[in-house]
Image (cartoon, rainbow, N blue to C red):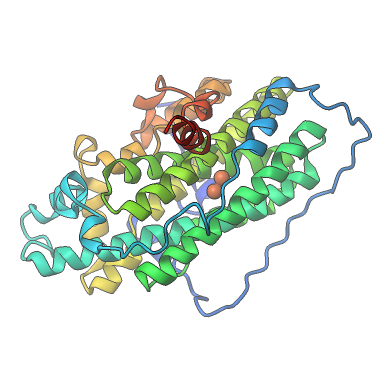
Length: 383
Ligand SMILES: [Fe+2]
Ligand SMILES: [Fe+2]
């Protein structure tokens, strides 16, 4: 098939010849968990613009004005006096027994086939700790990336908006760190697939690649994951925290869509292909990360058969995994990345089973309906 990903292409993009090569996926582990800092070269020019005309990009200007009125304070707008009950983190359909991990358990010979309530309860706790930890690390990635965008984007409206996002991301790192520290009292180091991805994004010298990697891919996934957890958790502090963070994230993804739509219109076919490849690489790294190999290690079960089983789960049984891509794919479509050239990215998204989201709502305007701060302000005014 001419449109298949060749082993050589896969090796160049991902460092392995087969996207689903289990040995290679598991070989990527975090070897420096005890390092206190991590240095990445950001290879970019800091750009001044002398064109100060505010609002020459009206959509970005509108987003900036919106952001100024939608700031919240993680210390005072969330009720940290709530005594968190871990039983409320995952209930009903998000109990791990009913998700992909549960469908693993039902397989003959599965290493988790004999698990009882104690082990499943422990898995629920570890998964929550792991997810919140990766969100926290990802939020720090967003903080650094957005600070970089302030320097590198040539448009004044985008610099203004990005500056508000820097503040948002500081708040996000702060609230995830505080929740982990004071309520979960546990955390995980950064997952190495996520770390590779963040390093790649920061490393790239082209300003639009920061947007594609962070605002479209990482934040697109975060918006979907936060939405899913927010809908299903019954722990009130976490629920409000996620609602407030999502309200910001929706603006951030819109910022990416609006900025790149204009920029991509001026790119050549070859340049667009590089963006398609970058988007695919990011999607695979994020899928690999959600195999949560570190959790299985902590649970003391054999990692390889479990991860193999997870990669093997039929799509319709793996709703969480699939939902993660429900924002990314329509946004890539809106940017024209899916079908540009020979529709290379469409074929890759077919390969990894996420193309079905292409016609879901994109995130260009969604921030209006997710604005938690103004909704709460209106509700308070009416009361
Ligand atoms: Fe964030
Ligand atoms: Fe964000």
